[in-house]
Length: 294
Image (cartoon, rainbow, N blue to C red):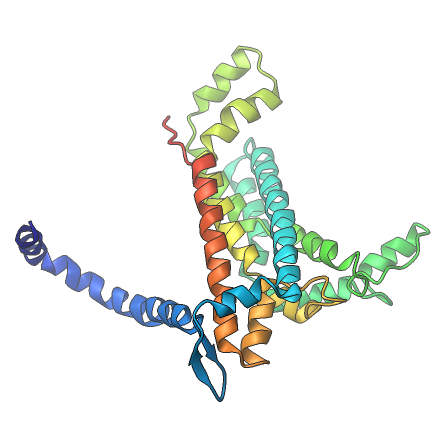
């Protein structure tokens, strides 16, 4: 059996030669760093020491209040952002669908623009929007007779403010993907539903959403992964404060590794994050992973 496999691989070796350069980069910049991270997670590894401690890093994590706080904040941020921007993307896609292609292209480009803008620049702009003294948001608050709020300086408002920012700025790539997927749905499904007297809500829930499930699944998984690892906006805007109300696992990994130089513990945090994301991905595949044919 093994001999047959090797003979087949040898006959098809030209294809492997084409794949080899890409695989070399993948091995160098992904597989080896991931393997090294797994290795470090079993060590007390800092600037001066390297000592094997087994699963002690993982045990310490789940007894550390700061890690548990970061884990809770990460769940709150991810499950606050993902449903909101996915819902926004679906709504915008459905609203754009009846328009001619030139109008759809214009609005898709408009929504996609923040996706290609540096997250650091976006975070700095929103620091001005949330500024408690001269920020745009508090200007509108004062104009309607409400008191100013320290949006990022209040532990009760800081995380909702970050979620709101990501909801406003995110979803551009998802709109493009959903628009392409919706354009591939045969028009006669919608025409037949209208002839049968189906309401717009029925068409949306019984035709549009089920036929968009593969694209929604992809967007949901990628959005969950991206938001669960959020770092740049936390680093620029709050640095985990106030009172650790916005600290996330991604930011805690950074401070543990590059401020405290505890590389073993930071690697263990990364492995826990990887495990959680793998479980989420499996659940999402089981929930939305049914095949759709039309």
